[in-house]
Image 1: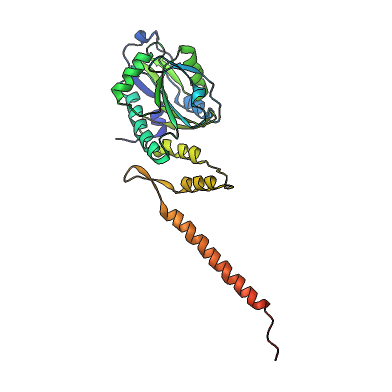
Image 2: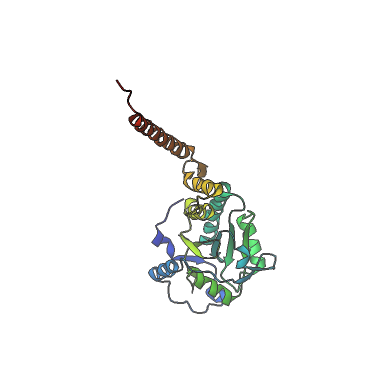
Length: 272
């Protein structure tokens, strides 16, 4: 599967039938890739509003329900048959790898259908089933047009109608436990670390306090949980941990030698 440069994947033209069928009428102006990327990057650090949605069962869900742990947000539309499914399948692999490395309940995932006229709970449920998305803690959400526009503005997600459906950013957003945009991941095909690394930083803490044992353990896990491209999985690298222990032991040994030598110089010499 090919890897695409960032700018090459920012503009995603996906076929979803006739634009009039989506109520778009005449085609809008084409997506400005540079402006879309700038809008997306400007959202980093922004608090995402507590928007309300419907899940696949038609039950109400609010983004505040996901506060307290990192959240991964992808935006697709169910009429898409090429790029959006690829985004979901790539994200599926990344989420599976991330859950194994960070813990099954360490983060949540939501996929939002941004074509509000078509992406009903029933359509989102069928789309998730068709894509084989069956991981726990991953919900598919629907909302009205105004809510989608507000969410898109918060996330820096840009989409416009086109004759083939929509032009939009291939964007996956990582949100921290407080609801702040932390990282943007671009492209339909990316390796797991693109998503898992920012999640690892959030779960284990980039600035985990060392005042207690749990903080020390999280700092060690942050440093020693590394991605292995050969197995496409994360593993705990004991060599780093062992190296730290050996280094500390060496420093302690040097310190002992220096202190012993200093003490010898302090001892009074026997008189003649």
